[in-house]
Amino acid sequence: MALAASATTVAETVDYAKQIKPILSARCYSCHGALKQKSKFRTDSVKSLTAGGDSESAVEPGKSDESLLIERIMEEGPGRMPPPGDREALSADQIRLIKA
Image (cartoon, rainbow, N blue to C red; front, side, top):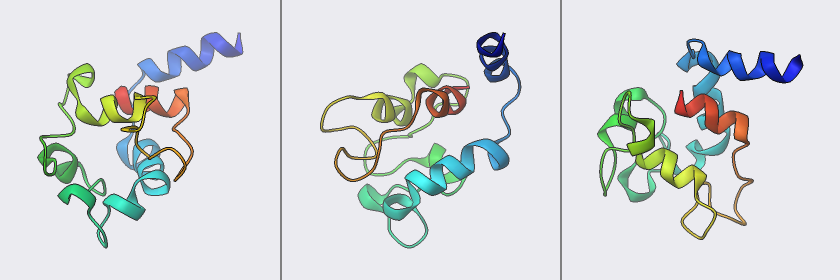
């Protein structure tokens, strides 16, 4: 039952401030926050996420499978974010929340 409950939780409305922002704060802000912006990309606000950085908009609202952010956090190679060896990869649950 616990597995079924956690699977349905993701289908519910995700609260950016309570659920997503803490993940991004812990895993992304040191390189993509107010004080430092690698690739001119910030993850510390929804506006910054949709604006993107050097490459393109990192988040496509309503189209998570087309979002660069999702692509990068799910990547298993050297392009993964956070970078391998720098920080631990996001968990499957964290990725599901961000995708929702």
